[in-house]
Amino acid sequence: MVSSSKATSKTAGKKTPASASGVPVYSQTGQAAGQLPWDAAYAQEKINLTALTQYVRIYRINQRQGTVSTKTRGEVSGSTRKIYRQKGTGRARHGDIKAPIFVGGGVVGGPKPRRFHAKMNKRQNRALLLNALAWKIKETGVVGCDDAWLALTKTKQVSDALTSLKRQANTILLVLPDRSVALAKSARNLAKVTVTTGSDLNPYAVLNHQLIVFNQSCWNKLFKKQP
Image (tube, rainbow, N blue to C red):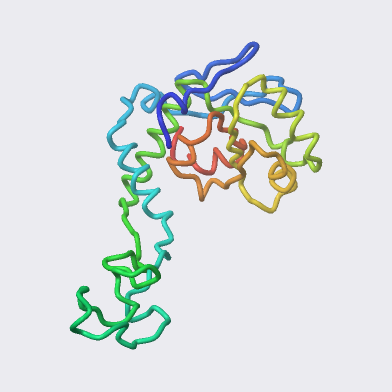
């Protein structure tokens, strides 16, 4: 469950806060390597918790598979013979043993396969993505990594690079331009790291991770219409 307390990231050591004009970028060794452009208007925008909560609800609804199914008395395997005669027994009248009142019988009103679906329009999705990022940036939960990170081919190298950021986070979202790059293949071996692309990024993923690490080229492509 996504909550404001879960979204807050704890940091260790020195950290460079995000300014109104950019997000800090770091090299593989944790050295400052510039900033990612960020519009000051978004930095001052009020966080819309109501809309973000609604998005989380819609996202989780769409993750439901809807494949659960129960059998009615007509679908249960078994004999259709009347279990005992209608009259003279002193007991209630019954038909076959597949009736819902018997153990192993059919289910009345049970769930059947169905499609769960809800949506928001593209403009809302875009606005809420910016809103979620603004929230994370204010909490210094977003950092950038330069393009030299893309050359990392070993899981140990990726782990060391993330450690050099001096951020303590149980969940890290690594946003890359492509899942096929060497960095993505190495980072996905780390239990606390989730790899995604700029085109697949959504507000739920941003809120559900304590630290967001953006590739510099991916950020510039995602916000190419912004200063």
